[in-house]
Length: 248
Length: 380
Image 1: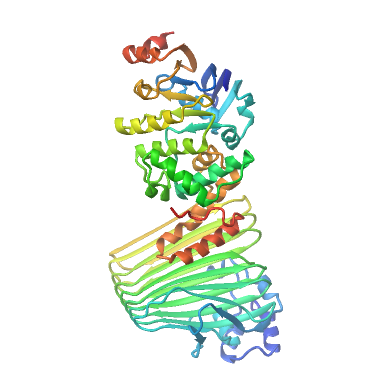
Image 2: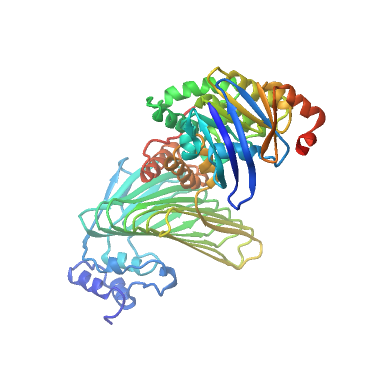
């Protein structure tokens, strides 16, 4: 599924952030990357999805064997990559439902499937939105405009449910959420777990991993994965903090 | 006297026998047309218009509802510059649109075009909205060739009346449209105008509004979409001549290729006009390095208790929003079209447009973007 090998990357101004990341995620697996602020967690997510402002200086990342770094951001999405953003962008004037229909049909077109007309799309949209407690009023509004923190994360999850990615990268999905909102989002994510879909969960805190239970946990420190283990590693971090790993 | 700007154009007009009113013609013959040394015409050059040989022709009016328009009996010259003199000299008939006091009309649609190909069309129009009346008028001015349509429209909205007026200026050819509106507002009257200009060679649309009585409001907004070598000059001039009055100007401009768009926005507040609010916001999107957008706010304020705001921005599309959409699989061109559409729709918020009117304009914008029907608002 996802193979990251020797990935070194940084900002365009030359600042080094990732200093050789190796990570393999198999089909159906849930991996968590934990790490202190500034360790390179969000950079990893952004580089995978193709955000500008970064330079990859060495290494590779492939999804199902295809080189992600050779693709435009939309091509990565078509290949099955999905990033749930830490800070979803507000797009005034673009109706949430229109945005969703455009995204779904773009992906269907590339896959050689017929585009969904408004009626068929709305039927699917309603069903999936309902599971996440998203009502029509939210879908009529502009993308993320006036959404609360919880609504933004639920809307990210709805996008994931509609786009049915191969690999979902959740970037600090727990940030800004109270426990109730976190539970709704985590349930939405868990409902999408399947043998052919993988997750990379990026988080600072162990809390999220109580709800989205990972198969593997990796500790990222200063641009490198310094320790990997199972879910008990997350509890260890919760007990003792990141300091011992930073020393490594 | 032969060296005034446009002298040969006027000679040709005269020898074709088109001049019906000698007085305005002589006045025009003396002053000539404004050249670019005249401040109000600094960005717009009439040279190529004046080099044309156009045949004077009448205004063709297609109204979708019958009986609402009539010929304008009082085609007396209104205030204005050389182009109003040209209109008065050739004396073209226009339309009369009257809304009786207290009437509340469903949206009225009308199309205006030249009677003949490659014509010079002059028209003097009058719109009269009675006390407490409400009307939505959608005017579509269009042509498919090199015609020049030139008009003056006088509007009066009586006490408590409300006119929403959409002027869609759309050309399939390389033609010219120069239209001026002079509006007078009574007590608590409202005039909300939205100009949408698409295509054509040169469009200069002027909106002058005199707010004569307390409680009145003038909204003079525009959506300007230009590509190729098209040129647009949108001119506003609001005069707050009474206390407790408000005005709003929302201008959104999108320029591509080598197009030019100009906005000259005037707000004047007279000395004794207190408690005035005047807002003006001009935003331009540049889609090409060779496109040009000029914004010239002109505020003249002689009273003390006045809240006037004006802002002008010129920029590119929001890179964060573009990336967010592309990360969801929407290709760059579609993502741009969605953002431009959202931007161009912004002035809709300033008016209470009926849904059918908004849908029609929305369709026009999508067509201009080459995405006709793709991004219609979804009914949920």
